[in-house]
Length: 241
Image 1 (tube, rainbow, N blue to C red):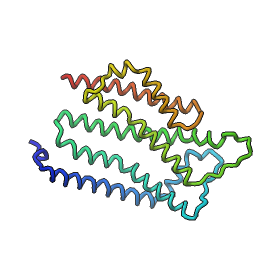
Image 2 (cartoon, helix red, strand yellow):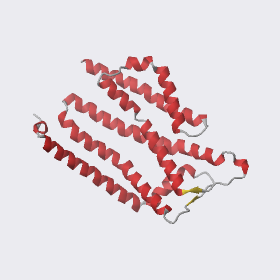
Image 3 (cartoon, rainbow, N blue to C red):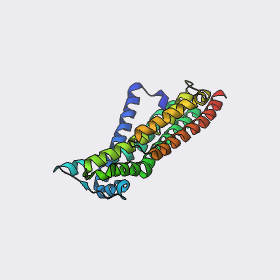
């Protein structure tokens, strides 16, 4: 017998409160650590424009400080995600059956991997293409670029997080398969529609006319779709048993 199942509603709320405090504590800790090492983080985040002849500027007295604080804040979120999901798993799993626990931990692990995979691909490949397009757009018109640190980092962080979130759609599909709302046969039947939607998403998160970049993101998202179908078939087989 699992003693956690015998806890009262208020006791469950107390456990949840402690979990939230732990997550917030990790979040604040990562913000502080990120701000301490902000110089190294800035160098790291400037990689997408490392091959471009562009300098970052700030035009308001407080702009540099507020931008660095914002970067530290987003770094806190970025590094806290695994801890938050682990705490969520530890809170939910006591109420699950033994076979359900392994599935839930799989979803949590898969969520973390996919999110960071999307963020990495955006940082390493997508962002350099995007910024190269912006800097070379209508280059012969004589208009010189002056990029501010706030606009650059706002755009970069938004691009990274949006790409990371877009890579989580297999989790949603697998969850819907798990609870029986959709099936792998349905996904296979509407494969052509899925490809169209995937490449529309790729076009949205790649704000350039560079087809090569959009194709790369689209292909990766489509591969995830096929992997989702394969994993979904395993889930369906286990659900029947």
